[in-house]
Structure formats: C-alpha cells, structure tokens
Length: 173
Length: 167
Image (tube, rainbow over all chains, first blue to last red; front, side, top):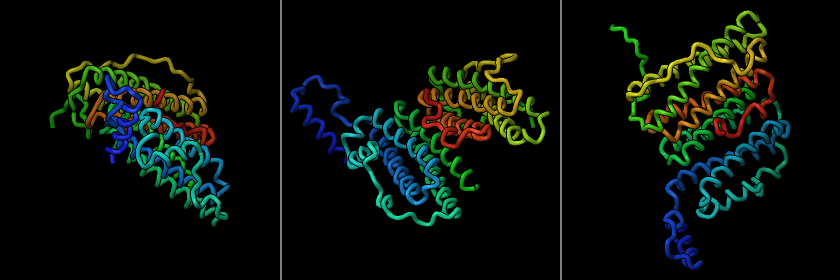
C-alpha cells in the first residue's frame, strides 16, 4: 500500500528531469505518513458523524457546526505537516473532499429524523463517545510517532477530549 | 515505613532524559509552580464568596490538586535524571485578579492554558512514559481550562479551542 505512492513520486521526479541529487524525503514516503493517514481517517469519520447529526438535529447546529469546524482545521493541519497525505493513498480524495467542504454524507439530504429532546441528548452522547474514541486513537499515535507529528497529535488528543467533555455536558442537559 | 522527602513518581517510569527533555520538563515545572500558587490564590479568593462561587471553588480545588500532583511528578522525574529541578518562587504576579467569581475563573483558564502550552512544547522533547505524562497533562489542562471558561459563561463552541496548547 505504501509502495504505490512512492513509485508514483519517483516516476514524477524522474519525468521532471531531476533524477540526481534528490533529497531522500522526495522519494520515500515520510516515516510519519501511516500515522498521519490514520489520524486523518479519524478526523474524516468524525466530520461525517457531525454532518449526520446536524442534518438530523438542526437545533444543535450552533454547537455542532463550531466543533465540526475544528475537525476540518485538524485535517488541514495534518495535511500541512504531512503534504503526502493529500497526494498519496486511498484516503487522499476523501481527505481533500472533506477539507474543501465537498463531502456530503448520505444522510445530509434525508428528512430530519426524530428531533425530540431525548433524541438530541442521545445524539450528543453518541458524538461524545466518538470524540472520546478519537482522543484515545490520537493519544496512542502521539506516544509513538515522530517528533514532528507528536505535538500536533497530542494537541488533537486534547481537542477531542475537550469536545467529548463539552458534548457530555450537553447530553446531560 | 521510612518517610521520604522526595516525591514519588506515580505511574511514570523514569526514562533517560535528553538535554532538550530536561529543559522542556524544567520549563513545564516552572509553569506548574506558578499554577499551584495561582490556583491556590483563586481558591482563597473564592472561599468567602458563598454559594454563587461553589462551582468555581470546585474547579479551583481540582486544578490545584492536579497541578500539585504534576509538580511532584516532574520534580521526581528531573531528580531521577540527575537534573536540578527549578524551585518555586516565593510569590508570583497573577495575570488576572481572582477577586470576583468571573476573575477567578478567567485566572484558572489562563493558568491551565499556560500549562497546556508548556506541555505541548515538551511533547517532542521526551519519550516513553514521560511523553505519556506530558500528553495527558496537555489534554487534562485543556479540559479544565474549557470547564473554567464554560463556568464563566463563555458559549460552548467558543470555550473550545481547535488546537489546545499550540502557539
């Protein structure tokens, strides 16, 4: 899976006529690409969850739109740090689509579902649980990844922990 | 039981520290000394304010306990690595006066934001169990700062920050 983007980059580099004195980083995928890709996937999935929740519960849009915006910023920060994310790998298209706001989850056009207070509370609780899971995933990566990526992942761990806390308070009323 | 004057490290295996790691943890410890002082001042200022200050008092106490624990853990880590941990100053200038409930909550948020920033800066400088401590510090400080902002009346999406700790 990693070989494909590497081969693609080499081909591009050779075709551009710079086959000599290429920095190694331009040929090999960066060491932190798998970590960054996992983190980007986590963010993309969270954004899809927010889109579905906002579509079902318009009354929660004020809160949820603000938190969703953090996740698009997280994705953009990952791409800024590991540019190979946006040019390589199967999730690149999805990452780009979400980052530019082009992605629309299937549920977004469906008529609003049960928007009762109880349904809203359970939607907030479900999002809180998803944020907590994401926080744990980011934490795990931050402990083992490169020194370049670790601070950002630790910050994303903190951000998702904050979101989980906020949503948990909202779900409790 | 033999009494020991040195704080013990809880759940953190003392890993070898690089010079960068020593500097980063020392900076974080200096921030924690100030946070222990500041959260204690906030708690003291809130003590006579009665029932309306109850939530803020609970936050101040929780923050004080957390910063005290972290101060001891960092001191023990630095001693174990053969470094000289920075001592607390006799007093600190508080960035915000805790004389009102709102002021105390704003001070608590500010102290935890500073703690989160110092933890963020230390992440890349340490590894192993020490990085775990630093990453958890960043997350817990960010959550406490957010709770303080919420309790101070900041609207929920504004109380959350996209990149806690990041400059």
